[in-house]
Image (cartoon, one colour):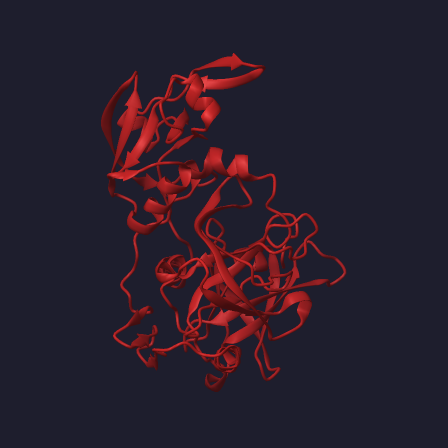
Length: 380
């Protein structure tokens, strides 16, 4: 069920939490083999059959007609309800084995999950795997094979700002609804529910409302390029800014959820803040770029590598500023302008056990620090 205060409802005001804790808490691992991604004109799903890839753009009518059979309604009865109240969300068929992809927050605390297909037939679903840190979940139904129409998973890294897209889902319980719009921006950092953030998120102006969560965001070739996840709103209803978890993240997380039921995220173990003009002035920096390390978690990979946090503050104009910590300027040779650059690199290219090299500014001199990524502890 959509949460109007966190996901389809309101992410305003959580940005500072996201910035302070993002590196500490989120950095998914490397890509899996591209057996579910577009390749050589065909897409191969997890049971081996191939689906033709459309080499040219389709009309919105064609996209809807080809995709609607693979989009499902997800009804959830919550454990905490005593009156039998249900929540509703969306999902889409991932493979012919009956795996359905949706949002983790859609099925959160669900006691009973029911999936309804286009023709009205419903099936009880089993929760296979949940990753709250990317807001992805996999459920499974033993449905008639004729109903299992997997949607094609596209490559979100090919998206461009201004590109037209479409969303299909069940807003306010209105099954099989389609909206369209454009890609408004890429690489957003989306505040989530427990002091962590989802990096590399797609921003769109396609109308997304309560009930859309878990449904597919499609490009004009009818490929899934994201999972509709959240809106930025103070009312819980769409105001022109929606967010979707990119398909590259889906392609990494979902196979592991199917296999293991959970996803192990690598961990750096720092928190801090982006360098803004005021902080740059206090720190006597030429440019307002980089990420200031404020806290280094004890026994974390960052602590073992010798990163230094900010132990002191100075007050300027009534505002306290942290000083003395390492300033991250680059990660693996990629310039760090803000926290987003670190998170996106970790998500796209790194996994547990990998090394990352940080270029840092310490005491007025630049140096390199190598960190070996480890699994993030539970409860962080």
